[in-house]
Length: 269
View (cartoon, rainbow, N blue to C red):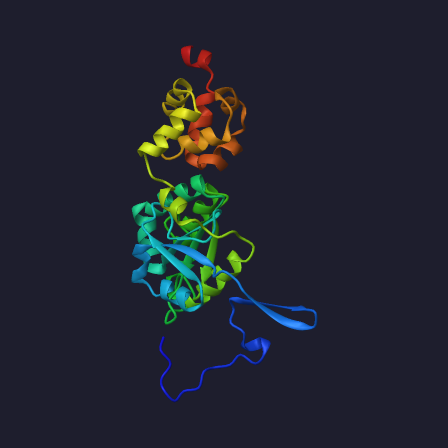
């Protein structure tokens, strides 16, 4: 931004005036300032309808816009965030879309996160006092959130009172994490593609791969992830039910485990 004429340049005289992207250290009795690389966040282009990307940019974070197949914000190679406003949260539960989104995040990222963000002019509560019933039913929003966390044990839910608070939360989450890679984030969750198919064919035997893809619970979105975690089909049959569920989700993991451990003799009888 241009500085208006007649306005003196700001001089950083004290350490408290140093910008956040400058590190200071003392060497030989002198204060040395080192400019560090700005923190980065990969953001889905559809999120630019909200105010959060602009606030992240104002805070000094470098935003990398692209079209993401999975998640809204990629904070690091491990952290994927799906952001929901309150109205969007209710709508996603009703349509079943949130389940699919959480399932995809759990398959492809080590730490999937559901961010529930309130508006600054909105009370920090899911339901008003008048809407709270004496008996909690299965269709209540609280019940649906509990079922979501049971289905996806690795999913973390973060509550944010407003977009400004979200910026601070993202900054805290990124402190000990590596920076995300834009190209990798764009490719996560994409089906097919010449490069992916070539990699699969060159790294894995075709016959076991085709057999794996025919099993219940194995989909086009998770079969590559399963192959990257296991050495062979024998190892697939030896892992526990909990390990399968943590790998591909509760429902799909349970379906695959039951198929692999089904007693054939009992079925014949």
